[in-house]
Structures are given as C-alpha cells and as structure tokens.
Length: 187
Image (tube, rainbow, N blue to C red):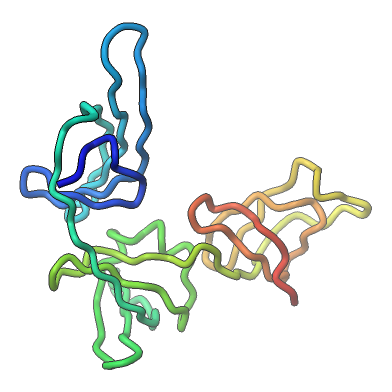
C-alpha cells in the first residue's frame, strides 16, 4: 500500500479496480483546512485523464509494473508494432494509447514497454532522444542561445521551441519529459 502523499509523477496504482497513472502530483495547503494532494491522473486502460484531490493519508495499492526493452518497428492501421530484441516476440499497441510518446519515436529506436502482469499498458521513453529538424524559419546571423527562440517541427511532427541559430536538417537532442530543446546532437 502507498499513501497519496508518496505518489509521484510516473507512478501507477490501483483504485477501484482501475489501473491509474499519476501524470502530475502536488501538495496544496488551502488558507483554512488540511493539506490536500492535487493530482492529474490517467486511466491506463481507457486513456481518460482527470484532475482530482486526495487526502494525504489515503492509501492505494501500488501496481507492480515490469519493463522490457524493445525496438519500435513500424505503425500500420493505428497500431504500433514493437519487437523484443532477445526473444523476437512482437507486441502490438494501439497508437491512441501512446499518442504523445509516438512524437519522440523513430523506426528502429529502442524503448521500454511497460507490463502490468501480462497486459501491455504503455511505453517508457528514454530521458532524451535525437531528432532531425524537418522545418523551421531560416537562422538569424549572430543569434545567441539566450534569444527568445523559434518553433521547429521535428521529423516526427513534434514542435519544439529552439534557439534562433538552429537550421532545418540539424540533429537536436530533445527532452522527452518536457518536449524541450536540450542541445545540438551533431550533423
């Protein structure tokens, strides 16, 4: 059992028979009354997200999630196909359940599939990924890193705010948790 006060983003627990993933968690102390936990949660099976408040002492059953390293093969008919690199087993995941994660994945990239028992519930991305800039405004001569930046569309369709000196075709390292530019990754 785990208390609501100990829940953090990324953790998964069971509530009323549903598998729930914590997207955001924060303590909130109203002017009067007791501290509450404000949570943004997602039902793993249905994909529905909702906001709620919980008492810090509420207890939940922690879900034991296993991960396995796999390679992303391709997407066909709204299904993503992944292959276990050791056993060559293939896993199919509906794209609508991993829509946000697909913005960071290229063919043949290694990711981790998350399992709850034998049920595939999602994928876990690496902290950063390297993506190529597909489209952006022309670079500005003399631009510095401290400028306000400009939007760049990556090869996966993800839009990232990048410094003014970045050009189309460059490889960039992108933070998968925030969807933000980290640094150039070389040519």
